[in-house]
Image 1: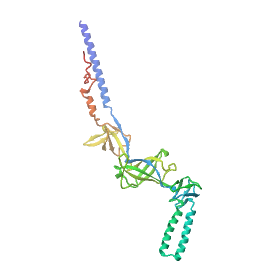
Image 2: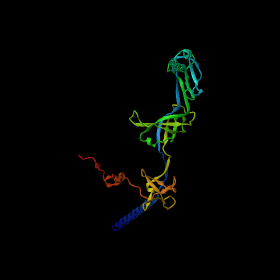
Image 3: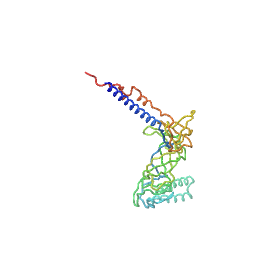
Image 4: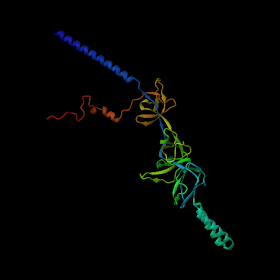
Length: 346
């Protein structure tokens, strides 16, 4: 019996020694894990101060070619794609009657200048001005230098006043009107750069500038107050045509680059923030500003993007995490979760 008890005690003592060794080993491993340095990578983020815009571009000038009076087309002097100058005649309507009436008026004026009174002569000359205008109205004339974008008329066609036969456009530059929210109008300046992206000109950017905006706002159908700013595109590729849609942004200021890192990489020495780069033990003093989500912006000429910074402070535990660590919220450590006491017995 004594031998059995002695053997039992030896076994228990051995188990205690083994258990103690295991606990000691695990403790050493945990300490090594906990003392292994943690590093955070410095990242770079760009901040753009811009106003987002969208819309369609238009020709710098556009003239609808339309008859000013009824008549038959006697001549068409241009075709689609032709370049014309201001004052060029696009088409001519029959003007026989108008020219006859003008010639007759000239004869009457000549006669009145010999036998008529000064008052009668003045009246006849005023009537002549109206007849000259009627002759001019038998032509469709270009009002600016441009290109015939569309023309659908032929000799012999009968037109009525205000009938449209085509379009003349000036595409020396393009323009666009874009809606600017009232909260952003104070940021606008004439000459600000604008970047355009067109679906017809993918992966490439077209540049323009702010030309101006009115001194009064408008209320949209959505109930928002906006100001319609005018944007000008002086240089653009031939792939871009009037009425093409775009998205873009007005650049309020040049982009700013920030270096971002997690807060545990920041230590404090007499309230002065510092970081420690991987491979060194030297403190690099920095300036910092909160950035959100547990990160900060850091400012230092010695810190660059992709630098590895050592953890020098403990991560902050959120309120939710603290709650989860409290005894009342632990469902796996032998303490029951509220409401988990099992089904009631009958």
